[in-house]
Length: 135
Length: 217
Length: 140
Image 1 (tube, each protein chain N blue to C red):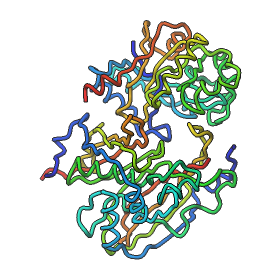
Image 2: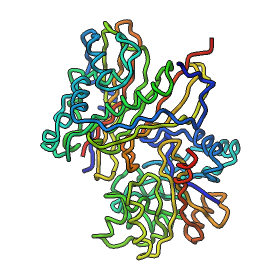
Image 3: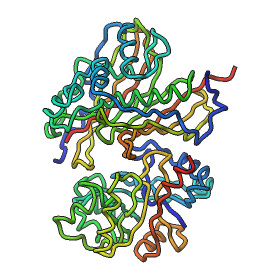
């Protein structure tokens, strides 16, 4: 499967979501189930930001011959201001890269999606690069 | 002389290891990892401008460069990359013909050798089960630091049957995995040309330092 | 008790986690992380997707990396975290999460420590690998 696509989709924005205010319940539940310690009940553990799934979590204009349903192949996250109860977070997502490689399970296409997260004070909260693998 | 022939820096998209941090780590760990140098074999790319001579001088370790490319017989390490080779083969193509690549690289002054041959799908062993052997293979990576249980062991049969030389490499994508497997050469290696000649000629063997590292922990 | 930057050495092993996650733990995390995909809910649902069984979300492995950092360096701040998911992690199978300090440096952005992180099976198969950058409080 050769991935053939219009490279102009690289950099294109596919989602812009403003989330409801972060609740204490969400923070406590995330910390409890992940085992990741939160500094306190009003500040989220760092990886809490991965729960931000916008209106569209995948772009609509991906190449059609990528393969069947994707798998999470990895993440790079840069953390800024911590997430606190009451924060109103905004996530803007773009297509960052698309490439092919081969591995143990055969030929794979990778789509890297970049999400910039800010809070109501326009502070940088996180940059999340998510690699989705299709085969 | 001991070299790690298969390494990835942060130039490869799935590695997080800066070259200088590799150097510092090797200096610090020299008593358990007596590595004299590394070969950077980045995935599917070749940067003709990359130059690590300053780091070589600073740390006293050899830093050579090659590439890891993807073919219809699995992944292949290419040493002695030059303009002729990159003019003829697109390293970003994940469907290169190994039957064409390996002899052609040798004609153009380099050397292409299959890596992690015991790995499913991207290793030579599985392809040899139903395809003819590749002309011009002189060596295979018998010891790969990133392989899973059983994958390195599968390679022995290949070596015995076809008479390939055997070398080792860490396949490191993280700093702390550099040098865990390597290759010991009888002769000194000072350049990529020396490496190509040595790999063609023999007089080397794979080394496994993983047990040493466990004892050191 | 907080760890001081001066107390951390390159080569310093991080805190190790030895775990076997249950299917229920994985499901609970997936719900809390707003990832209600069938593959994370049960063996039957995962098999219906063509998988060998229920799988642990990659994000949960990421959270375990963050936990190792927090337990190794109390009081420090996680600035960057990366993970490459190299193999499927299944509940019910024991694994170990561990890491090592690979670099430390003083920068304009603070005192930083770099770490390698690995999640591997009890037989040594590396399912998840990654790195972290940790910022320490400046000396007062």
